[in-house]
Amino acid sequence: MTTADQSADTIQSSVCIIVGGGVKLGLMTSVGVVAFALVSRVTDGAAELILQSVFVLAGGALFSYLAAAWVKPRDVDSFACTSLTGLLGALTFTVIDTVILRPLNVYHWSWDQIGGGSGFWYIPVWWMGATVLAWLGAWIYSAESRSGSVNLSAVVAKTVIGSVVLFVIVGILRVGPFSAAMMALCFCLALAGQVVLASVLNRK
Image (cartoon, rainbow, N blue to C red; front, side, top):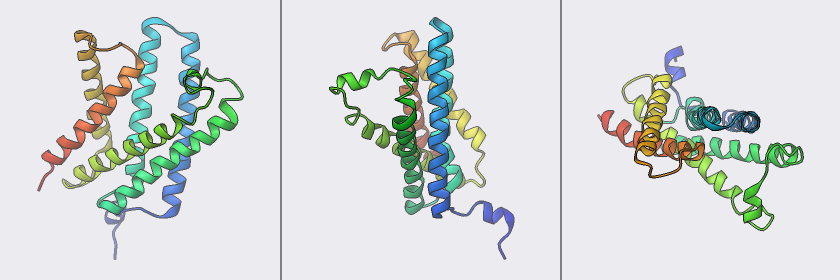
């Protein structure tokens, strides 16, 4: 008989988990994007940078780790399921963005101008990026699970702290712009670095 603890640690790769998780991620992304856009309209300077960076960190953490928390990846197939959940989240957001956010002019689309009026040159890049974030989160979750149950709050805290440290270093050394976009880059670097650290520290 399977106990509740054992069931909680079992890989969850049903269609309901993957599709439902993708829709949830897409909805969360939409809410975050709208909030980010509204904050940008009513703030400027240091306040804008701080608030936007908080949104970037929160959004990155949710997209990187929620899919893993739902799927509980342990092997190659469950890594793929986690990545697929992230991809479906990006696709869901794309639909909401195209049907609702763009017509309402929630924010301006300067990237469209770069692409000659079309967003289809960078939207697939967003899909790939979302998939990679979920995939990296799956690696970290799987590595942490080798030591027992995963303390997701602690895992997220490590990524966030690493991101902030990198961001501060960039600001001190002035090797890049002090912006929310740089915070996003620092988050991705911290996440990738955490994959290596988690794998090494939890090696059996």
